[in-house]
Every structure is written in C-alpha cells, then in structure tokens.
Image 1 (cartoon, rainbow, N blue to C red):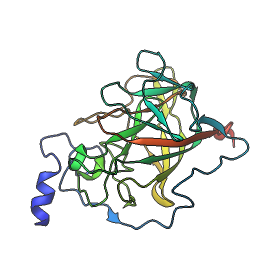
Image 2 (spheres, rainbow, N blue to C red):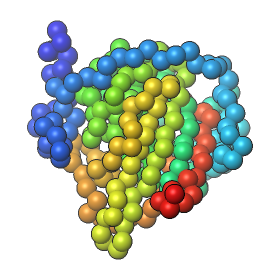
Image 3 (cartoon, rainbow, N blue to C red):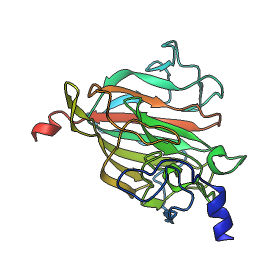
Amino acid sequence: MAEEIKKSVGYSDTPIIPGSCWHVHDGNRPQPRVVTPGTASCQEKAGLPPSDAIVLFDGSSLGNWLSNDNQSAPWKLENGYMEVVPGTGNIHTRTEFGDCQLHLEFASPEVVRGEGQGRGNSGVFFMRKFEIQVLDCYENPTYPDGTTGGIYGQFPPLANACRKPGQWNSYDFVFIAPRFAGYQLLTPAYITVFLNGVLLHHMRSIQGPTLHRAITNYDVPMNSVGALELQDHGDLVRFRNIWYRPLYGYDQA
C-alpha cells in the first residue's frame, strides 16, 4: 500500500534537483514525518502583532492588496479573514519589502474535496518569486517537495505539522532576500519556516524562483525587495493576521 501511495503522488520524468538524488516533485522521496502541533493560542480569533510590525491584513480591509493587473483585490472579505475566489487570480501587496520576519495564518476548506495537490492548495510567494507551499496535508499524501511548508519543487519540510481541515494554521518565517552585484549572484535567498510552532526549515538556501516540474537558478538578476503574493489555485483557502517586521541592516549585523 505504501508503495502504491508513493507512485501516485509525484513524478519521475522531471530533472534531478541540484545537490540531491531526487527528481523535482519526486513521489519516492521520503515523506516528512507527521508531528501533531501544540494547542493553538486561539482558533476563533487572531492574535495581536508586535508593536513594530507592519500590518498587511488585519481582517478589516483588502486595501493593502492588489490583483494581478494591479486593480483592487477581488478575493472575499468576511468575518476577519480573506478567502480565495477561484478564477480571480493571485493577489499581492502594495508594499514591497525584502529581509523580514513574516507572520501569516491560513485555513484549508473544512469540506474536503480532492486529494494530493488538488486539496486546499495555495501558496505564499516572497517577492512574488519564492513559494512556500500552502496545502491541506492532513492525512493527505503528495510529493514531498510539494507538502505544506515545502520550498516548492526544491526542499520538503522537516515535518508535517498541519491541523485538521477548517482549523487555523500559523506560519512564521524569517526571509533573507538574494543579493546581486549587477548580473553576479552574491548570496541566494534564505528562509526559516515554522508551522504551528514546529520548525520546518532553518536558514535554508533557496535555489531560485519557484518553477513547476523544473529546476531553477538565479540566471536573471533581481532586486532585493518585492511584494508578497498569495496564490489562487482554485481552492477556498482562507488567510488572516498577516504582518511583517523589516530586518533592517541584517547584512551589516
């Protein structure tokens, strides 16, 4: 049965991820171990951000967010959260930033439909380029580098700490933007990720902008700031309590 599950959740005809022996989205890659997260501080109500945080979404307005064509964000606003409206496209922040601490909470649909990548799928894109996966992976196997908390197409998370469908999950990130000198990459992007208080990645270097079924690189230079983007993947995923703290002078610390 285990072998049947592995064969059904990924690909074997994609490139090998640099520095590994695994194909991109390899279904035979070891699955993250399941960890039951501790009790949430409050499932019914979002917490308060730190005093120096810049709030991107507090549940009252989508005014800080734009559609793909830079119009007002078309997602649903209700009861202190925003919800994907399938078919309207991704949304992104008006604000651009780089090195940061970011907090975000999400909930997959309570009514379960689909399986694998077709269940509660969305994503958090730093600088609109680097995706950390959002997916309902509660008792739902998929290819490991596409699991909730995975650096999509590159690195699986250290653990699967998803709550049950419909419950709120809490993401905490430390993101360090890539640095270029002209066309030369000086340092790649780095990320640390916690899901529901469980460490998934620690200062992991990101291999390049997110791609599907392909390897990536930093062949094209980029700025060290960009907007935060949330993905419309066709599922009714909810988000709330999104804020960040700029890490000014990180590279001089």
